[in-house]
Every structure is written in C-alpha cells, then in structure tokens.
Length: 598
Image (cartoon, rainbow, N blue to C red):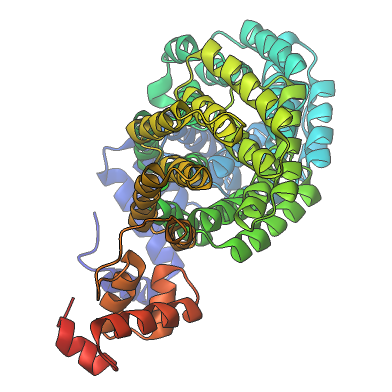
C-alpha cells in the first residue's frame, strides 16, 4: 500500500500521532502476505523489547541480506537490535549483523560508531574475530598501520582454522593489494584460506578464492578456474567487490581488453545497483573509471569522478579519486593541473600509508613530469614504480602500466641502455602471458629505441605504426595517439618527412577526437616543424579553432569556451584571433552572420 502522492504521506504523518501510527502498522501487519513486511510493520508498532519479534526480525534481515537486498536488511537489523531485551545473549550477533549490513551499504561511519563500544565485550572466538574484521573495514581505521593492528587482533582471537580463514583473506588484501608487499606470503595465506574456509559458507569460500585470485593476477596468472569454482552461491552473494568475478574484469583491464572489461564491469555494476550494495558499487565504479582512463574516454571517467562527490562512499573513493583526476588531466594534456593533483594524491597516499595508492600517485607524477617536458624527473618517478613491481614479484605488466612512459622518459633523457633493459623485460613478461597490451607496448618501446639509435632503420617506423594499430584494435585510443605522436616526432628528427607528416596528422586528429587539447597542441607544434609540409589552404581552420569558433557562434563567452574545451582563456583568445583573421571577420556578430548557428 502506497500513498497516491508523497505530499499526501507527509500531511498524513503530520496529522497523526505516534499511537495512531503504531495502530496502523499493527493493522497493516495483519493484511500483508510478505513475511518481511509483516515483521517490519510489527516492529514499527512495538515500543517495548520483544525477544520473539527481535528474533524474527534478525532472521528476516539475514534472508534479505542473503538475497542482496542490503537496505532492507539494515532496517530489519536495526529494529531487531532495538527490540532485543537488555542483557540478551543474542545481542553480540545482532550488533555484528547490523555492522556487516551497514558496511555493505557503504556506511563505514555508522558501522564504526556501533562497533567501537561493543568489540571488547564480545565473546571470545568467532564473535571477537568478526568484530575486529568488521572494524578493519570501517571508518575506525584510517591508516595502513591501524588496519594491520586490527588484523593482528583478529588473528590473535582466531583459535581454530575455520576462524583463521577470513582473517587470512584480509591479510592478503592488506599486504598484497594495499601495501603491494609480501606477495609470496600472501599466496600461502590465500591457499590456507581456501583449504580451511567453512564448506557450508559460500561467502567465505568466494572471499578466499578472491584472495587467491589477487595473488595469481599479480603473478600474471589466469583466474578463470577460480571464477568457475566460485559460481556456487554467486547469485546470492552480498559482496561483489570481494569476488573472483570482479578480479576477472580487472585482469581484462590490465591486459588491455577494453571491450571485454567494459562488458564484465557493466554486468557487475548492474547487479550491485539492483542489490543496493553501495560499497561494491563504488569499488566497481573505481575500476570502470580506471578502465576509461586507460582507454581515453575522458568524458565517462570525469562523469564517474563527479558522481563520487555525492556518493555515501566518498570516504573510500576520496583517496583514489585524486590520482584519477591527475591521470585525467594528463589525458587532457593539462600539465599544471596534472602536477598539482598528482602531488595531492602522493601526499594523501603517504599520510595513509596505502602502498598501491602511492605507486599510482608516483605513476601520475611521472606521466605529468613527462607531459611538462621533464624526462629526468619523469624517469625517476616511473622507475620507482617499475623497480617496486619487480622486487615485489608483480609479473603482469598492466597492473602498473608504466613501461611505455618510462621508456619514453629514458630515451628522452639519453639513457638508452636502461630503456633497452626495461623493454626486454617487458617483452619477456608479455610473451610468457600472451599479454595484448604488453605485446603492443613492447613493440612500441623497441621501435622507439631503434628510431633514436645510430642505424637508419626504416622498419622501426613500420613496427611502431603496427603498435599503434594494435592499440586501436584493443580500443586503447590514448595509447594509439601517444604512439603516433612519438613516431611522428622521431620520424621528423630523422627527416623522414612524409612518414612524419602522416603520423602527426593522425595523432592530431586522434587527440582532437578524444578531447585532449594539450596533446593536440603538441602534435600541431611538431607538425609545423615538418619540412615540406603541405601549405594550409587560406582560411582553413585547425580542429581546435573550429571548436572554439563553433562555441563562440553559439553565444558562449571565452571563459565558458575554455571550460568546455578544458583549456585556458588565453588559449581560447588565441584560437579565436587566428580564426577571425582566416575568416575575415572582426566580431562575434560578423562571425554569427558568416557561419550561422552551429
């Protein structure tokens, strides 16, 4: 039963008293055939503790959570705890259940406030272990050190193998994923967790398989068999973020399989949204944002970043969002913004101690330095990421995809021997794993090194063009455009004018299509240095000038045009000044008459 209009409901509530509303809920409980709604109406009618009703509400909450209906589970669990008699033996389980549902709903703050006063009074064994693990996922923890301490408390309370399994899963996530360290130890913990996870708990088994999946993925090994093993109970799994299915999508992204990764993430996101699982939804949206940053879809990535600002899980996404915005600025070709955001991302990563975020921030700083024309500083940052991955035993080259930028920085800095060594290692890893992105990138890096070498080997230009084509087939537009730009620059320096012109014109068009004005200007600057370049027909506009003129003709101010094109106002003024001269107009009125609405 629902009101015909929300305003009617608001008026009815204002005009009714508490006793009248309780009586209405009692009557509604008698009218519904839905068991969960019935106990909910009875709870809303109850003022005094009621152990039988509390038990019924707790069971209804478990069923709702098992189906993935997280918001209803939270409401039912809240009433179950409220109606439990003081000193009830069921209270620890009621508290833990509500905390678990709150975390699944993305409310880390409420979960922490609920658990902190209760955890020390929980019974020894399973309840105490579970309490510490839930607190480790809540807002009670803000640094890696605090997280590790909470896991140690949980491990100390785990007095049998079945209780150790969930703790070991979190230790894998903490060390291998959070800190990007002790990956060998993490693999052993994950295997033990899989062996000891309770057979009657599908969620525990899936979490253990997910932990094992992380150690396999980082080592460059497939996870398809783990996905198949986890399918039992997948339909009712409440936490999609801790599942092998999510890892399969991430591995697709690392390998550069853009279309497949998008499809996989879309299915998981739809499921998380349907179930109201805010935490899983936020994690999966992070993966989608990272995917689009690799693919060069700046609009989608920015939409996700803007959406996070209003998300109840903003506390989680705040840390990765800054480095994602830094990489977005790199993609747009905005060096100052990229440097600023990368610096903020690094400061946040160092404050929290999250190793994965520190490496990603270093990657953002390195690419931003390369964009700013500082190859030595870029090489220092990117080399730190590469060396850490090598020391840690990370064999998938797409986990931290620094290789092409590192090789480009080393080449620009004149450190060719280091560039050769990085390229050889990349080629080895990519070949062993038949890694699509790695193979295309190894070809790109090898060709770049040959192009700057002493031999005038024109086959290197063909190899690099082939790498650009491979990126295009994978859907990696930004990598393709960057490769074409690098090829055009190298060919121009060799005075291979025709290949340089073709490559730079293709790069210019690609950057313009993506909305990367900074890179577009770089490609144009290189193109203007090509000898024998075809003369520009009088009056013809560049892509950037066409866009600026089109927006001006629509009545946008220079500031509004700058915001739309992600450039400075001064750049807009330059584009319009050149365009006016080419078109023979002196004002926006003349421009509008000349072009008409665009």
